[in-house]
Image (cartoon, rainbow, N blue to C red):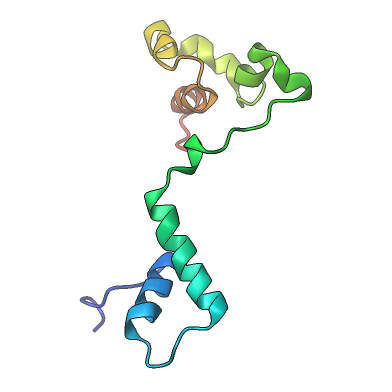
Amino acid sequence: MFENVEVLDTKSDIASYLAINTTTPLTKNELMDFIGLQALKQVDLSKLFKVKVAGKDRDPMFWSFGKIHGLENIAYVDPEEVKATDGNPVKIQQLVNKVEGRNI
């Protein structure tokens, strides 16, 4: 019955729908949410903010490897694949997850 109905599942989709299909004016909060969500679509926040490195995280080895679960399984990963990660802990975690048979 509802196969052809588009489902709105994110706050952005709902705000966009309401902004276009409402018969009453938006409240100030609704308008600010809508404007903010539209601006976030155009700005890459990763270029504006950095993760604060403090404490143990100041050591680059701890920063890269201290956050990876099951790091010992990296021994089973192709060394070329590890080099291709450039030390990115997220990419290393994905490689370790492949060895462990988990997809995260």
